[in-house]
Amino acid sequence: MSKRDGDDWKPATKLVRGGTMRSQFGETSEAIFLTSGYAYDSAEQAAARMAGEEEGFVYSRYANPTVRMLEERLALLDGAEACRVTASGMGAISSAMIAPVGAGDRVVAASALFGSCRVICQTILPRYGVETEFVPGADLDAWKKALSRPAKLVLIESPSNPLLEAVDIEAVAELAHKAGAKLVVDNVFATPVLQRPFDLGADVCVYSATKHMDGQGRVLAGAILGKADWIEEFIDPWLRHTGPAASPFNAWVVLKGLETLDLRVREASRSAARIADAIAGHANVRAVHYPGRKDHPHHAIHAKQMSEGGTLIAFSVKGERAEAFRVLNALTLVDISNNLGDTKSLACHPASTTHRALNEEERASMGLDESWIRLSVGLEDAGDLEKDILAALDAM
Ligand SMILES: *Cc1c(COP(=O)(O)O)cnc(C)c1O
Image 1 (cartoon, rainbow, N blue to C red):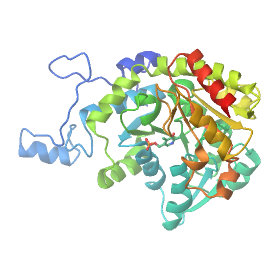
Image 2 (image 1 turned 120 degrees about the vertical axis):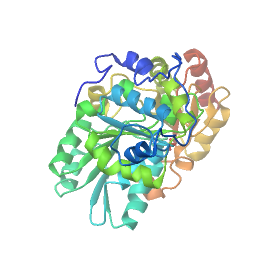
Image 3 (image 1 turned 135 degrees about the vertical axis):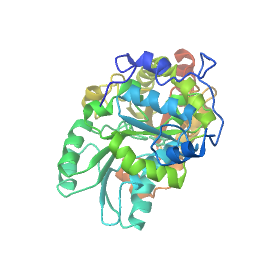
Image 4 (image 1 turned 180 degrees about the vertical axis):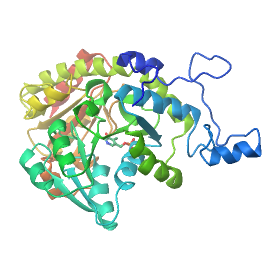
């Protein structure tokens, strides 16, 4: 990979400066190019652009200057050769999982995945003749067995949604490569600030930029990062012809969100660590899963690949759905919402919301029962949040 401007910068600098392209006006803030098309100087130039013989934009379903700035910033941040931004996280993940495979191919995925990712692997891919197999993410022997046969793609999420389990990215990357597969890592929960999948052997990294990257609950966006030749061979034709292109306006919102990503994620992660400790001792709490706590079943793996515990906490209350609902309904500051990675702290009941598309058996395979609550910690004062959550647990 040839060196780019900014490759030597630290992440905080990349987040503020990476990919910026100034117009002839010298604007300090990135411009929003709300244009679907582009005009050419001549018919010859139009032909050369369309043939890919001349650099330049041709149509915003293919590429757009504002979207391009975001792609360059994200590629720089994760240390990837190439990035493509899409209209949503699922636009990115579905493209990364569907574009490179065909009938007869095999996909292996961790069983604990974001609900829609699980549906893609379990329901959509098999319809097109792609065999999929699920593996308990933390079980290396199961990965060895599943990857003793050739596969095309492996999909993992670490920490996983909603129980924040760890998958050993480095170990699974090695097994995936031996099986001839590319490893796709959904790095939404950790964010590029706290975890660097490419350094651990991942081939492709996917994001919902809707979450921490915008981080202020405004827009949907997604990203696919990987080697330039893989993106050009599989992802570009897929995106061009199926059309999940991001709006330049949304890309701009995410660009501005990235400028504060490092600050926001680190601050929320500090608060989350404090809140996880505070609720762990509560009489109505059965278990707390927080990657930064030593009692997390996969703490050692998280500690190896994440620099901090992150902004999400999962906890199980002593009871079932009714008790979990009572806690959620007693919150006065934290909102009940299935979104995450926001400046506003948000809590949800995964079994009845984000993971309701799965049946009970599938939920059980990922250790998810009705007692779990997922909390996304935002930027309110940590003491105020702690008070709200402890009071809600008291009210249970
Ligand atoms: C939200 C989310 C997605 C999907 O992203 P959208 O932007 O909502 O389409 C995928 N994976 C994870 C882990 C998520 O949290």
